[in-house]
Every structure is written in structure tokens, then in C-alpha cells.
Length: 325
Length: 200
Image (cartoon, rainbow over all chains, first blue to last red; front, side, top):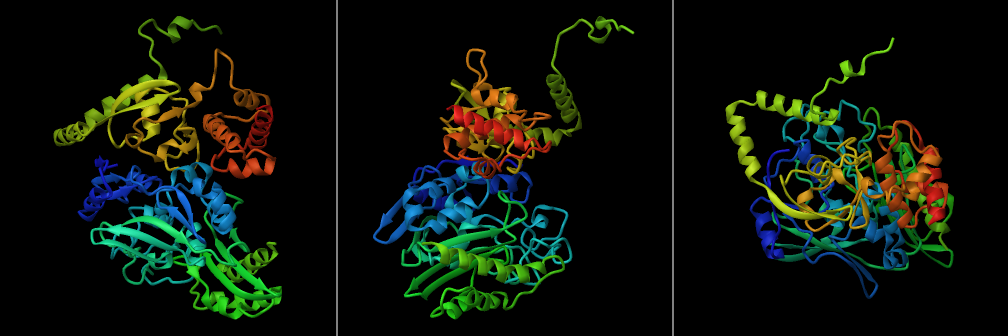
């Protein structure tokens, strides 16, 4: 690991000013320390933001507001999160390990970097790590890679589970930066790789995520997260699906669907949602709608199974959500 | 054929295998460094931080390199080598310790971010010469073979029990999944955690 300085900011403004001039924020550090040790990231200044006042979880009306410095485990175990947005608790518990969930912050979770093995291999081409060096995954081992939103320059999936739930639930995020504050949908945080895969998010230099706001609604309770993976826990998704249903008089009024493990960013399935509104929550309707999930899929040599696994996972997640009393 | 122990262990200052390895590695590293690198290393060494940490109830004031993980400080600065370095990338759980009562992987966190922290390691579990009930349960249930992952398994098991996630074998399997055992002693590990949870 290259030498760096670690600074404890006296205020949020100090932290933002330091980051605007090139320093990196660090909270849990579970991604950054690992990547610094591998020399994939070599920041010379770190700003320890853990003393800033952006922790905690609160309820405002129907909204759940999660501080960006709240830890994954803390959010998953919070009674208000479990009561108001069980999908968020379930998606968090399905991610990482108990130890990592005690460490990793919510803001850091959203900004975690890809798990493509070639991203961490300094002698392999990776346009995300070294722009213009090529993508070793496209002709390499790519069973874990994306089938949606890929480009000829990058095929890595976004690894977060809770991001899938947040995108499904229309969560927004508040950020502070050198120019002041702004709020926008969590979905808009993530860029498609296109021909600039090294640009992963839409934050401006110095901007700091301070909180995540999740609006409640009739769909919030009848919601499930299903994660399909190579082992039962502590593994990244092959395919995952967040499904939330609002059912009135036996008819679906509202659906929220997003999937993970298949897209270069958390992937909302709006065509599937539209196809389900007004139908009865039955397996046949789920299966028909789920076929739309794979529109535009571009499988690689080793991940063709995801084209079939994706709709099946969506069907099962919808069925699980439908079973919630 | 009986060998003469004095030939195998000639008289002289007694040093451990670990100290011998450290001394050899340090000498090799110094020998390999050209003079410019020595200057760079010295410059880096000047960038130190001083902090306090309470480890197993004992307060320490430490001056460390900001690059040192909590694991590095435990093993190399405090010589508490019970906590193991397995993968050093947060995947295996061998380095699990409790920081302020919560289980974490000590390899993936900078010690310099834990000024004032209270840390518990495997060395702190024994009380007055008696093993902790979870340590006893690991012995009774054969929760190990080679033993390398065991300190991490036990510290993680303490967290698992304290969090209330040791209610059934299935629940323990899920909530202990951050600790890998390459010998495959999982049935014994799960049984030990379940047994200890039942005793407390």
C-alpha cells in the first residue's frame, strides 16, 4: 500500500473542501482498504468522515430516512426499517458477511466498486481501472458478469444488494457538495459504462452522500428480496430480484421490480411492472411479465444461463411478495 | 536412536520461530533496498499517528504507520498473534475481533481510524486460567482441525450469540458464514456455537 495521510475533518465543509481538491472519503473502508492494498486505488489523502453527523435512522411521516454513515447491520436490525421497509432489511442481510455488515456504511455500499476479478488484476486489461487498456472479461471468465447495460468496454455488474431494493422503492438521496445540497433518485447515481466505464457515478467532485430517503406506500409491506447465488450466504448474486406489490380486491395496483447480478447498474424493470398492473397476482401473469425482463440482454460466453435464470428469479420474487400477508 | 537434545537445541539466547522469521525478513528487506528507497521508506515512516486503544482491558498508547490495519497492530505492534491473517482481504474471517463489542474483520480497517476503541481478541477470553465457555464448547465438539481459523470462528461466534442469531443450526450457519474453515469442521463449529448459546 502506498503512503497516504489520514485526516479527521473538523466540519462537513472541511471534508467536502478536501474531497473537492482530490482527497478520498473513507467510512467503513471495506472496499477502499482492499483496493489500496491491491494498488488498484492509490489515494494520497484520506478523509475519515465517521465523525460527521450523518448516522442514524429516522421516520418522517411515511418516509424512512437512513443516514449515509449508518452501518448495514444497524439498518437491517432497526425496528423502523423492519416495520416500514422490510425489503431493505432483507436485502441488507443477504449481502456481505455479518462482520462486513458491522463495518460498511450505507453510502459506501452504494459507491462500492465492481467485483470483476480483472478489475483487481493489475496485469489484465480493465477500462474501468486503466481507461483504454481493454476489457479482459469480455473474452475471459465471465460467468458472473452482466447481460444488461453492458458495452464493448465493460461488462461488470454492480455488486450491491441494497441498491437493488432502493432503486425498486424509488428511494432518493441527499448529497452535500461545494455548491450546496441536492437530492435525486438513487437510480440516477449509477452510470452505464458506455465508453467511459471508469466514470461510475454521477456525484460531482467533493460531493458527499448524507442520507437516503425511502418513501413508504401500500407496496412497502408486501415486498421481498430473492437472491440466487452459488452458495447460501456470503456470496454475490448470480441474479437477484426485489419485488414489491400493492394488491387491492385481488388485483395488482402497483408493482416495483428491480434486479441485481445481471446489470451494469441496479436494474429497474419498468416494462414488467407496467405489464403486471391490473392483473391478478397469479403465476401465469408473473411468468408473462417476467419474459420482458430479458429484453436487450447481451449474454457472454459463460453467463448465458442468466438469460433464463433472470425471468425465473423475477417470477419467484413476485410469488414470494404475493404471499406476504 | 536417541538423539542428544543439547545438539538439537544448542545453548544460547532462546528466540521463537516467529522472532527468527521476522529478523531474517527484516535483514533481507534492508539488504534488498537501494539507498534511494531507504530515503523514501524513512520519509514514509515519518508519517505516523499516535492513538490509544484498549485491547483485552489493557490501555495502549501507540505510534503507528497509518497504513497498519487493526490486524497488523495486534499482531506486529502488540505481538498478539492469536488473531490470524488469512486472506487479508476480508473474505475469510480468520482475523475477526470485537471492536466496541461488534465483530469485524480486522484486516480491512485502519488502526488509525480507531483511536479510543475497545478491542477484544482471542487472548482476552480466558479468565483466571479457565477457558471461555465458547472455547470449551469448541474443544468438546471438535470445532476445528488445523485450528488456523479457530480464533476468528470463536470471536465471530461470540458476536453471533450476542446478536441473538444462534437460535438454530440453520440460523448459526447463515450468521457464521463470514468465517471460512478449509478443513471443513463446520458441523463441530455450529454445534459449539449452539451449545455455548444454550449455556448463556
